[in-house]
Length: 314
Image (cartoon, rainbow, N blue to C red; front, side, top):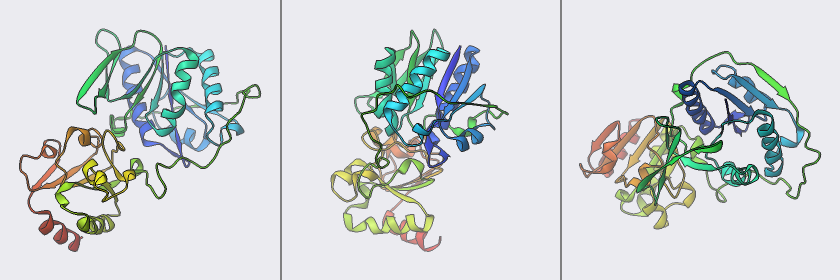
């Protein structure tokens, strides 16, 4: 039985969420004695994947796939489904995934379990995903072939199994694909916005900063760390920062190497968007702040004393 994982291209680099999804497929395949095939439309990415344990890397070499077009993507995956009859199609839960994969589910008439944060293999294969603003988790059993996508930060790419995989290059006849969509500029969340999912260091601010005039203090720290600024929902709702900076269930899901939390209390809606961070440093004056439960380093103190001194000494 084969599992196909799509490796998304991020300007000739592998999308991190795709690698995290590959971790999941390696684990599931190992437990069920199945195969993992990686699908990519980019030759450079195919070569980058050879160092991982993958039964086969399939590079689809079609000029039509050089730009994002969901109609071409649908045709490719329909043909892959006909050729390989996979048990699972797996994707990182990106903006592209949200756009076209539900159409694939409808076209193939198979279920799509999206935005997952875990899986279980006892008594069959099932997946877990948050619902009701991440207040509850839903467990869904997959009783047939299907499609699954995983939230960013769900799996650690350091757990990828290494190997020496081979590449199979092929082209697919797309001449019969009816195209009614013209590719445009690559999607951005908002004008002047930022993709926090690719940031290695994030300085995230919460209501503990008290007022908008204190945002430059956090930006100064971010500049010294070469980091991106993120925010909790209350900060965005107050208009202190743009929505493109919001992290959490109603914002972006991130998994940076270092996550600085400044005055963020740690509501579950925020935690679900950053709990996959490799190292979390939290600063808050409340010793009972929920953020401390997942922090690697917890600092109880006054932000307005700590941050200027920290910034000065970096």
